[in-house]
Picture 1 (cartoon, rainbow, N blue to C red):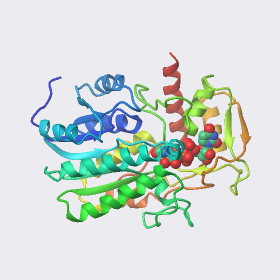
Picture 2 (cartoon, helix red, strand yellow):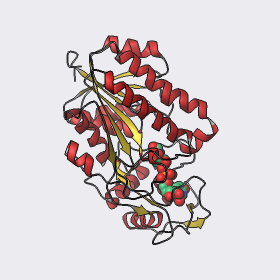
Picture 3 (cartoon, rainbow, N blue to C red):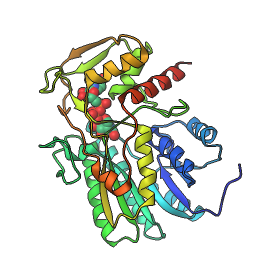
Length: 338
Ligand code: WQD
């Protein structure tokens, strides 16, 4: 497949990562020409070949760090970039508590670098990877886009709040539109099992820990807290299939939204930890080894989003349910074991 050099491109930062690789597939499926930049700090170079296999096309890739403004300037000189989807950031809540400066440097300075370079180029749209964590512990559920920012305990969450505030100000004077997509809990993998989540070390997140326990890589899942004020006592989250999440990014490029828009990307349905475990046990046809232990510090009892604004503005809604999420997450895990 030859490179279509003259097409205007979408710059996808962090495009070899978990979310990024799924966004890359959806962008190419919809006919976009993309350039991926990634520093491989939380991704594998082999994902690039998987993406080419999946999409039947070669993909422009440049190894680099968003903190290196000269690298970013070079990328904009080498390609005609019309849209930017910025996913390159650190995202581990716990790690951010121990390494706050690292998180502010990459997540905030990295964004500022990208916005500085954009000042010298004509872009149409800047899509930013934000998170429901900006809401902290909301007073009312479901969370809507007018729910105020809350006291988010981790530096990771604070970087997302800061980035949205920076983008809100820049959008008022920039020639391009800005969309902040507030992810709830992305889980699952592409149905082909060629791309998926590759957590480094012991997974912090629930679903990869479940699938690794199912695969015998972990002895037992610890359920953090069974005494929350929820129907079964375990905490509730709005899990969303990563492919649904990815398709929202492509839709965000298509529609005119005005200078600054923030949208919740969730399903509108919360599931408890025990409900997720049950869904896994059904798709994997096994009993999962787990025990209920003390709560994890910093966890919210319950959060789920109202996705109606994303439907209104993007004509997007999540199509896949919890069974799909767990089926695809399990299939991906089984493929890794081989
Ligand atoms: C989900 C539920 C845990 C692991 C975080 C970030 C968010 C996003 C996703 C980056 C909670 C419980 C978990 C385990 C468990 N990150 N759990 N045992 O904390 O909702 O969100 O990750 O984008 O910004 O805040 O996700 O998957 O860690 O936890 O019982 O071994 O599963 O207590 O109730 P979380 P999670």
